[in-house]
Image (cartoon, rainbow, N blue to C red; front, side, top):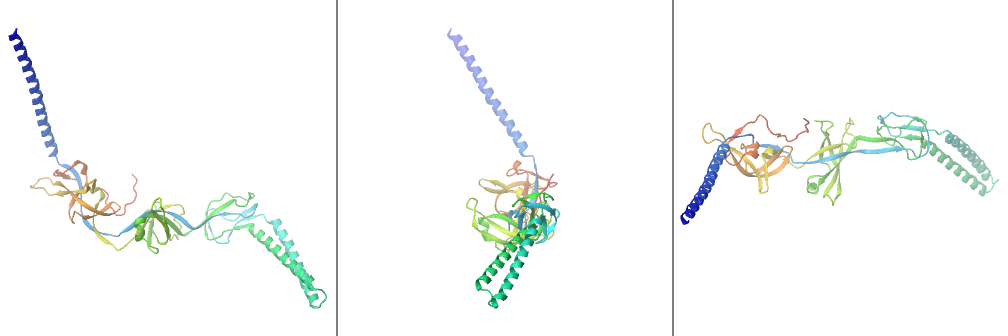
Length: 377
């Protein structure tokens, strides 16, 4: 009985040893093949594009998005009620200050004015006749004073009626461009009803906001360049005319106003534009495409492209830390960590690390323009 138990225990132990040994051997073989695969994959060169660090003239700039506003802009209305007799302008036309725009029916008012003019003339005749009699001591001073008061009252009533008649002609308050009107002859207008918009657009204001950190970089009189997407490549220039002395406590931004020449009336109120203000003297910076920079919690890095160690070999990647300066467009300035002529990886950093062999393909390069323009594909 004891011998049977011993044989069974020996068999169980043998089976367990075989299972454990097989598992250990399998894991070792698997790890070996994994290491071989990783080593094989790691030795494959990775395709990247490259850029060369070079110095360029850099004009410090302050950029912002602005909104255009007319120098003078108003919605022309009527002060008095009346029936529209004629509309004396075309929608979208230019208007001069004082130009008649709409004529309201003023026939009853003109008739009343003529009656008041006749009364004023009669009062003047009576006053002058009584003045002669007063000088001849035929009437008293009280009568002459009454005649003078009547004349003054008649002239004032005539002037008031003349002002009412003048209000029946709606005129342009200043030079500008008219908008689109929906007023038609025969339409009745109440006081305050809109007639047409009038905007003076040459020159034109551009309002923009800047962070408080840029307050020392802008001043009244600085040149401002404005571009609008509606006119690609066209540069409109002007000068800063006002800076708001109040900084918005909710955004810590301040507002500035510039006056832009607009002789061809291309810019219209309400359009958004991009403003650029030259600030300070030009400087030389070592520049790279922004795509060449890898941003990490512990700092910014780039991958240098090192020459192959053996003839016919592939270049390798070396990660280095850099200190960045200002940026413009697709470019960023590097103030520390590189020197002119260094070749860095400009795209494909996600698949490389220190020592990775590189296959350079610059057939398609990232954008590297200081003044990029929007592109639609």
